[in-house]
Each structure stands twice: as structure tokens, then as C-alpha cells.
Length: 144
Image 1 (cartoon, helix red, strand yellow):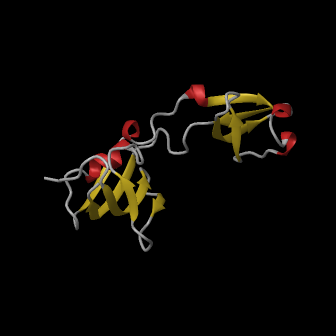
Image 2: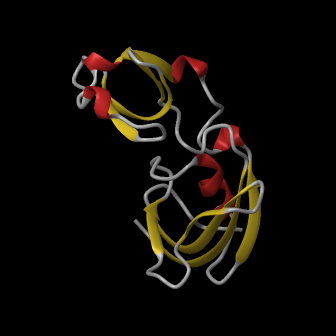
């Protein structure tokens, strides 16, 4: 049984794949990835995957979208008049842009459709709706 507890620093190597096998992120061959356990720095499914591991353990897990970046939310697909966007007519299809929410906060989104006067921006996380596979090697746990 793992002795990992909230606030501990967890160090891992990992490779993340989409359901079709495409690698979307990896730190293999780089410095270990470090995160504080239990404080929301990583997706829930990733934390659940390391819970119970000991240094040196390796695991491959499939994390459902609900424990990763969530399901796609159509309320986060927004339509704007081009003239309201910084850069206006200079935006391009599939460009990532910043959307000011008007309350001091902002979202990032991807331009998924354009007309002469408007753009449709998807503000869902790029991995929303995806079940993800991770190969994880637990390297070290540093007590808080």
C-alpha cells in the first residue's frame, strides 16, 4: 500500500497517449515530472493511478474523460463577431486565441469555423472528451 499523502511531492516519468495511440505528451528522456499530490495540480485519474504505487513501480492506465479533462461541453463553443476579437480579420482556422470573459478572467480557445463576419471558438480543453492512456513510472515520493 502506498504512503502517498496530500502535499507530498511525487516524481514520475510518464507518456500520455490518446485512444488511437497518438502520444500527446511525455517526459521520457527529460527531467522527472514533479507535482504536489492531492492539491489539483494534475488530473484526477493521474493522481488515482499513482496512489498505491511504490518507487520503481510502473503502471499503464486508461483514464476516462470524466477523470481527465472532462467531456466536451457545447456551451464552451462560442460564436463571436470578428470585429470583437483582437486581430479581427487576421484570425485563422485552428488558431489558438485568448477570449476575454469580461470579468477579468479569460479562456483559451481554438478557432474551428469562420465566416466573413464571425468566428466560432471552441474553449474546451484540447483533450476534452478523450479517454487517455498513461504509462507511468513512480520514481520518488518526498514527504510534505
